[in-house]
Image (cartoon, rainbow, N blue to C red; front, side, top):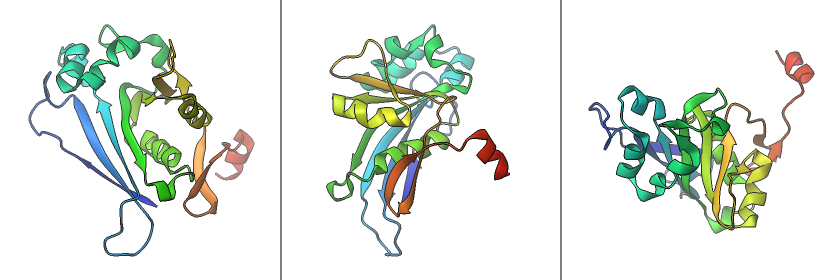
Length: 197
């Protein structure tokens, strides 16, 4: 399977109302040679450029509010004094990745494609980010995402947010047994990693 990522990025200097949040539209396609393969899923993801806002002396709340109520709702939970709260700042960076929407076609559900997608996004679009955030709406969502390393964000309720500290993520997702059916794999031990180098 493969993903196609697109974004609308202004070339002008960023300011409180533009350029400090980058939204990515992600389409998931089967890995086949058809000239126009059908999309099997999509996602909408935002990268919040916290360090750039700080460099420009733009309050982070203003940035999130100018973008949407959806992002403004993150402010008091994850940020303080225009910076990630200490519990979400693990040294891997200082921006944040927010997974707003993730939909897999019913015919492809149950294959953990969503887990593989989020892990790949954390490895690519989230370079320089300290935390990845996604909303949850049920205990089933929590059970689905925690094996990937996501934790319930306090205070936790029937609905809320999950977060993944990107500096400490460890779970890998691959399809070693059946193409297009993903599973969480343990990381190799330090000894095994050493043997492969």
